[in-house]
Amino acid sequence: MSKRKLGLLTGSAALALILAACGGGSDEGTESSANGGDGAASEGTEESGVVEFETAVTNEGEAMDGGTLNVALVTSSPFQGLFSLELYEDGYDSRLMQFAIEEIFSTDENFQITNDGAVSLDFDQEAKTATLTVNEGVTWSDGEPMTSEDLLYSYEVIGSPDYTGIRYDSTMTNIVGMEEYNSGEADTISGITVNDDKSITIQYLEVHPGMLQSGGGIWSGAMPKHQLENIAIKDLESSDEIRKNPIGFGPFAVSNVVPGESVEFVANEYYYKGVPKLDKVVVEVVPPESIVAALQNGEYDIALSMPTDEYPTFADLPGYTILGRQELAYTYIGFKLGEWDAENSEVVPNPDAKMSSKELRQAMGYAIDNNAVATQFYNGLRSNANSAIAPVFEDFWAEDVEGYSYDPDKAAQLLDDAGFEDVDGDGFREDQNGEELVINFASMAGGDTAEPIAEYYMQSWKQVGLNVQLTDGRLLEFNSFYDRVEADDEAIDIYQAAWGTGTDPNPEGLYGRNSAFNYTRWATDENDAFLDNISGRTSDDEGDAWDKEWLSEQYREWQAYFSEEAPIIPTLFRNEVLPVNDRVANYDWGYDADPSFGWHAVGVTQDEAITE
Image (cartoon, rainbow, N blue to C red):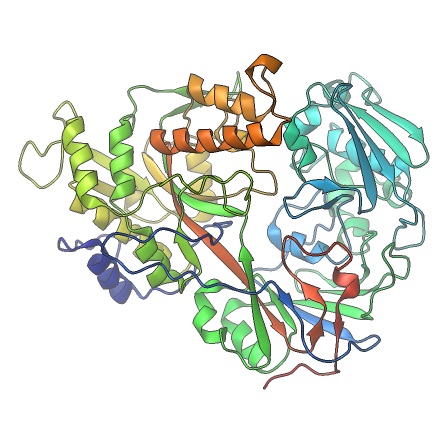
């Protein structure tokens, strides 16, 4: 399909034809696409029809004592089985760990750290310190109390020169003495002090408001030192203590692992919030093509990572409630605008890059109808994205930023005014110097919709006179795609990808001048100034990032600026969905769930799943 040429059609008609010809209906191959805020109606199309969901189940009947919760982990591949916050690498292991390996901090509905979890935080802005104190009654699943040594050991593992994971980053190097420890120049981390058997204090080089967010700068893990200290750090990743017999302090404990296939959890009698109602949780890998039939047969109570492309087949599934929530992510079209200088760890913009014209980038945004894509491909579980800040961050998302909705006339006018004209009459515009303009588009393979969506985008750009072709004439395999985007491959001018934002809305990690993840390689002095404001690197007379109202305004002004500059075109916000059987009681999937609820409070009302 990627080489087929279609006639010039309206955007919605082209989409319908491509969908029919290629067989749409499956999720695209990008991991971590984004959440489902309401998008504006597209010109010439119907409303995107984003589906609204409940986030909790309130099923009838009293939860019984004990019972087993059967959970499906929907994936085509075996899970890796790295049961450690310090060592895991993907979302599937994260979903498995939620039953046994908790983060030390609890958070509120805005993902800000609270003191209701295993560890309390005392943050001193002036002293640039964070004091972490293990709360009363917090015990590992083998009965050993959590101590300050367990908090420290997590930092010692990540900071070790022998560490094999991916979490040694700027949040770690911001700790006083961490770089010396990592390089082997010091045997201890000078900036971490053990106060007593339950408390440590961490000294930072810089502090900023984002550090009060989960994932914003203060590490949220602890490691059971009494279990792991005799294992060489370089061997932790392959050890049975991580892969088969991990110890956590969550509501359940791992009792059996079939590598890549299933994990059995039993109730943790030492759980600090109380003994769970359930006796067991059993999680099994189920292929996407089998999950709907398995739910119809009542084999599983909950299905994690449910494929949204199958939504029409389980939307009205007897015996199940479909929960939904916004994802902390978004998809986007990125424009290559420079290179990465690895030696100096900074972006080097190229003013002569093929996509350097802001008007060209804006035109490509107005030429595509993302509400139509959301409706036709994603069953109302997507909507047009207006920003690189997800709507779930209500205090910071700029709802009034228009973003790029479908307006091909405006796209054509922008190109005309910027000097992109069809000089030779072949139907395609030349560049501003009258030279041939061929834009190489990288899009990754995966799922039935990957190819038709890429075709639709290229067809839409063709409508406004832009000659856009797939890099190498085909979709790229997932790992190859990101390797080439990260390496600033000259065969890529634009690309379609997705970002998971995590629980910290600060965009610096993705669009900062010194961020390796700034794959567009775009940087400006104005952007630097906005990110300095958001990250608290301004003097008091310029503004105070610790003032939430002022900080919120900085976020909103940045989004307006970022949208105008268009180094990326955000394309889709998305929802994720979760089928829950009607025998499950007391389950809340919302980001604002009562902290007293959790997996320990979940129960079942009868022995067998309900299927009618």
